[in-house]
Length: 236
Image (cartoon, rainbow, N blue to C red; front, side, top):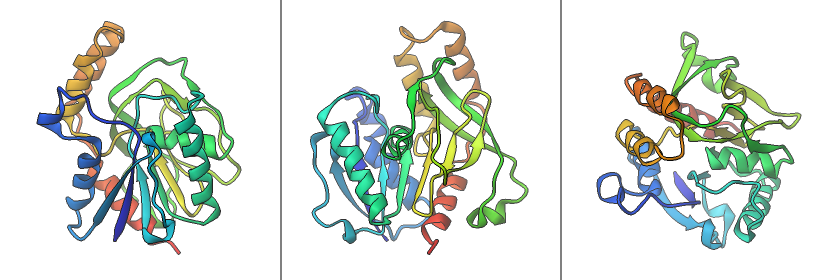
């Protein structure tokens, strides 16, 4: 399966020797369950895109420190590209920033949340099980690392919320037959999340820092989410 990774940001240089870059994390996320994936990388933050959108079985975004509501040329171009993928019925998996860029491309609202920073492991309730999730009937929670202030606040008519929490009501969403996204980071490791939390101690309240660090002992559902994505990709 051929994959186009839409790179929206890079890992801090100081952390790259230990953790690699975001595109490395996404590649590892998939090759962990299937080594046959082939990846091409397109740095959309520098307006680099595939010349032939039909050349890929699916597209996936990285996260980004940028806000999707920022009036930046590359973000406007990226929103237009996501709308093109939607029009051409191409599969797209949105991660964090990508979750929000899909919302913007589908004319939904994204803003900074009144709940503040979400960091550490987010525990979410699974509230819908489309057919491609049917084999996980006994799973009631989805535990995924997060690092965000912005949240999707409104949904399109076709959108189905799959997982939610009081902190983030639209955590995982199937927007249509082609777009699936998640506010969390299923590609991140606990070690990388811990490093990011420590890096942001100056801008996040101490009590939230403690909550985030304490949550890192919760077992992650990264592999489960990856299997869900693979099932979703097989939808016709």
